[in-house]
Image (tube, rainbow, N blue to C red; front, side, top):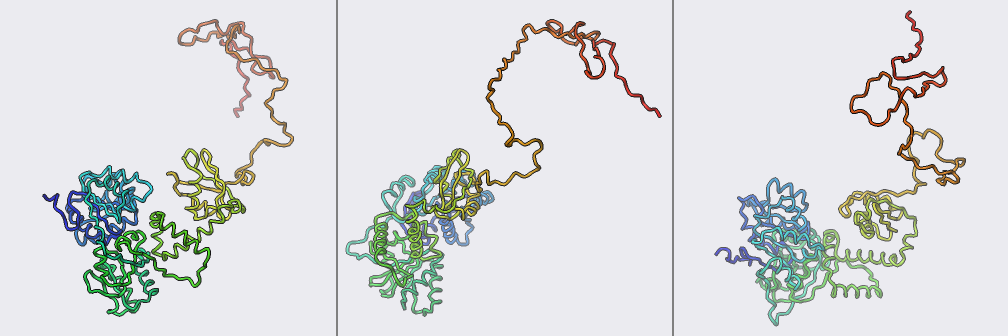
Length: 559
């Protein structure tokens, strides 16, 4: 049956598979070519989904798929930002979509990505994907994808923890794992320079300047890497016969070999290196160091120092190197390696390490004496985040140091109240912190910050002056709520009791329509008269009859 037919790349139709290859898209070119061949361009729907660790890996995966597609009518979309990707997918669904789990889940929840037509899912690579701290997006993504689609897992190494997760995400996957080296095969050794794909040509130039080798061979699979390497060699003055490209099965040579890209297996590595004792240099990404050690069969891997200082301090530096050596050999620093990898496009690896060491030495003396670091003037800031938002003081400090780029020693006391927070920062950077932190999102809420001023330092309120007597002053007696000897007022009662009715003589006034009023009449003929004007004349009597007095009017001048 077609579903059971094995394909040349080791990926079978309708079956889960695991490929152990270096974290390099040129190494995964054959896997991508097989999966792209299964796509039907006539069907306008997403058929291949590539899950990556972050946006940068998603962009690299999309670039590799575009190279594999060629001139075929297959569309590719890198979901580096879910709003842009959602808009494009609603206009025209892409055949191939690459992205991190969080971005893909957002597309699924917004109904921009339809999972029903997905035939294959690629996890590239499993190592950095599982290094992300939040695994919830990956769980949600796998719950939405169809169960019958093929799942291909790319990993640079297999550990017991990875094996358990592979069995969970890609059950009963066939593993394409290289067998251990035969006994008696000597391991290879290499020196490496950490770099990134975008700065590979510049790193090659610095390596050739530092090593000063007259002849060498280059190894690269992709056409772009070959062209870039040859262009660098010619620009440095190497003759055409001094630089060549190495290939598997070529005659043995002792010329140094520079690996611009890593081979895909140990057999290919040994076939390219040959049996002779030749110097081996590798230009690798930090995430590829584990793959390089595996390809060499357990040989030594040492870095090349491209920048040499004229003088190196001894003594305490030896102890420092010993501490770093212990961390590198016994600790797991893969997360830190991935975090620093983007800087390799601008700086050398040893320069980045030197900068990190300087930051560490600057922070060490300030940590035990926090009060000494905060001896300068401090300025209070008002933030619209409080306990009702679930915010903590440490999260506020992290947001300020990250957004404003200031050390933690310039942040003082943090008071988290019910609806807001008061933060002390160094006065010289207060305006900077307000400008940088305002608009940032913390705990899903946009931050608003301003300088917090005491009441006595606030400017007077603008507007017209208040009319009337002043509210307070030295001569104004203090208001007291103590009644002293004042007798208490008896409580009011709404019970009329024996209160006599008020007489009211209606006279000839017609009765009010409606039901008759119960109870004694309110008025009568015995009701006393009420004066209308106490100061002008005798009181006027109003009995409700026709004898209504009239007010005198002034004479009108007809002329």
